[in-house]
Length: 152
Image 1 (cartoon, rainbow, N blue to C red):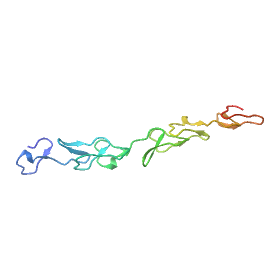
Image 2 (tube, one colour):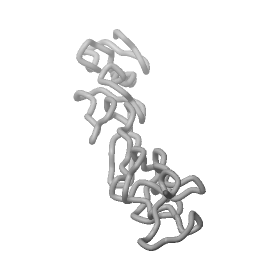
Image 3 (cartoon, rainbow, N blue to C red):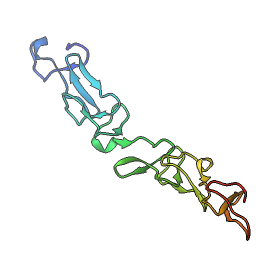
Image 4 (cartoon, helix red, strand yellow):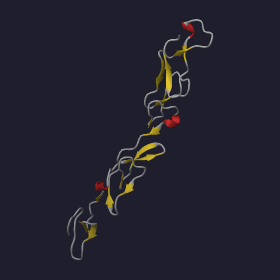
């Protein structure tokens, strides 16, 4: 009989006729037989090595083709594009796994890569305006303010 994992053709006459059968997709051939491809790699039937997923993509162990490779979900502050994760721009935010960014509420701003609506804030008011709970408001007659004022 052939050793474990090896096969032979009908009519074989010795152990030297034994060989490892070609590996199935998701596995590759080693000196000890077929071994599963690790994470972020894939292989087709009969492969002698595994192929890495394209840059930025991941896959489960035992993947059988490049179509099994995918972009990992984006972290908060980023969103998914066809080319992978991209940072949300200014005045936008996103949570973990987002496919798009949300806009800050009217009148509020945020830094690029913001992760929640709580990162949105009112920009400091310019001279002649003052900050309220709803944003900047103009000072009334006979009143004035400097940049960033909270009152006139």
